[in-house]
Amino acid sequence: MNLFVQVVEWFLDPAHWSGTRGVPARLADHLAYTAQALLIAAVIAIPLGAWIGHTRRGGFLVVGAANGLRALPELGLLTLLVGFVGIGLLPLTIALVVLSVPPLLAGTYAGVRNADPAVIDAARGMGMREHEVLAKVELPIAVPLIIGGLRTATLQVIATATIGAYIGLSGLGRFLLDGLARNDYTQMAAGAVLVAALALVVEGLLGALQRLIVSPGLRTAPARGRAPRQAPVVAGGIAS
Image 1 (tube, rainbow, N blue to C red):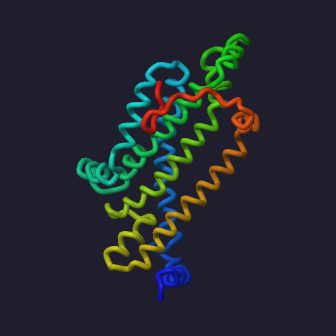
Image 2 (cartoon, rainbow, N blue to C red; image 1 turned 30 degrees about the horizontal axis):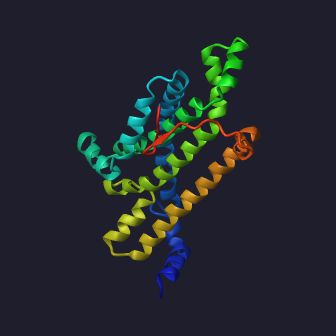
Image 3 (cartoon, one colour; image 1 turned 60 degrees about the vertical axis):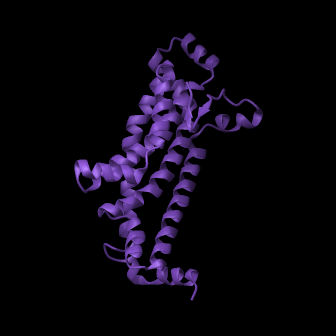
């Protein structure tokens, strides 16, 4: 019997869909880890990226932070954090936040920084204060890049949250780690399919959300050759 058939039979087994070790329970835990990390990262990265993009000050920090944090090995970071704070949800959350801050920070910074200067000057000419220019003009223009950063961060966090199984947490990574411990390659393959399917579904939902909330004018601008000025990208970050 080939692996494909075995994986299909694994998914058809009712025992794998009930209890605290079943797919629904571990999927819910995996989504909870992901949502918590993304929420914390958004609270940190979006205001910081918006402020730096608006003031044009400290752009080099965005480049350095984005490139530096992207280079960190997540499993190594998780192991180090466990040594400092012990086993539990906290080290995994910190590791996932560190992973998801760079794309959100870079996307927000680039989106605000690339807002059309003529539009910003017009807003100031109408008497808007600086915080109003940021909130009512620059941030709405930056929404496509902010959501782009969110989509990148979400996919990375969903994939990386599997390492929580190495410190005894639940989530879809348990299917991989438990299967490896028992040489149960069918379970490992099923776990990998679940992680990939979750990433694809969430990516599709975020893509639909982006089309729903982004102004049609912002979506069609690149196709008409009116793409906003792009900041140069340096090794996955955005240059100042």
